[in-house]
Image (cartoon, rainbow, N blue to C red; front, top):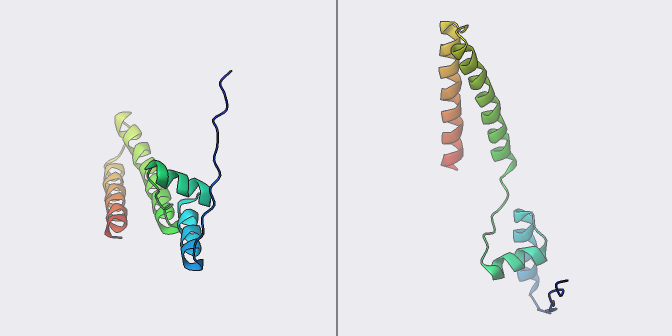
Length: 105
């Protein structure tokens, strides 16, 4: 049986401003303060979670993608009408517009 890795406890003092900054940064990444500091020490990336607006855009793009896939299936089955193809192109244009909005931010 492998021996449990020895842990070390560390006490640090921070100013109120430093502590609030640590709390805010960890919360933005969806991590505890400890997990945030450990990732920094290990050189692992710490990224902020996407904003609600970005999550909503992703969801919208996902729904549009589902619609495009349904149209593509009907085209492949030979049951699509010309309007379906036009609708697919319109939806694809919406995806590109949403992606552009995300990229601008």
